Image (cartoon, rainbow, N blue to C red; front, side):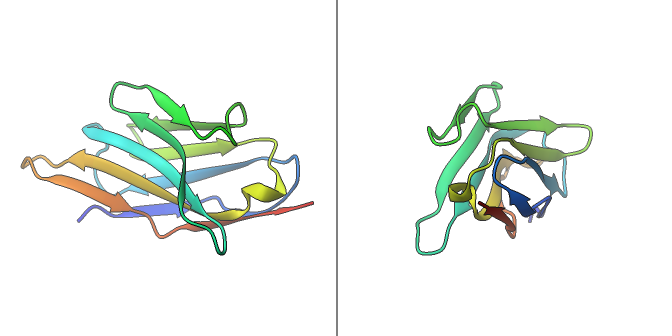
Amino acid sequence: QVQLVESGGGLVQAGGSLRLSCAASISIISFREMGWYRQAPGKQRERVASMLSSGSTDYADSVKGRFTISKSNAENTVYLQMNSLKPEDAAVYYCNIKGTLVDGRRYDSWGQGTQVTVSS
């Protein structure tokens, strides 16, 4: 089982920035897709940002130009840089990585979530 540990959430004022991290227990070099999702109270989980193994990225319209997904193969970590935060960005943020293990088995792992709170 691939473990993902998120960090970096917290309380920030509107207009501020946070960087979320998602550390994987194995190498992420052979990932197929990675993404960040969020879920606010009473709402469905939504995809915020994603990256394919080709390097192409995609963002929800609500965060385009403000959020950036990136990775560090050396650190086995996925990041989400969030700038110009708005109160509506407040949610629990989850990372997800889909990849292939060395034995050929595929995995689809989720982190435990990290809370982001934005004060107006």
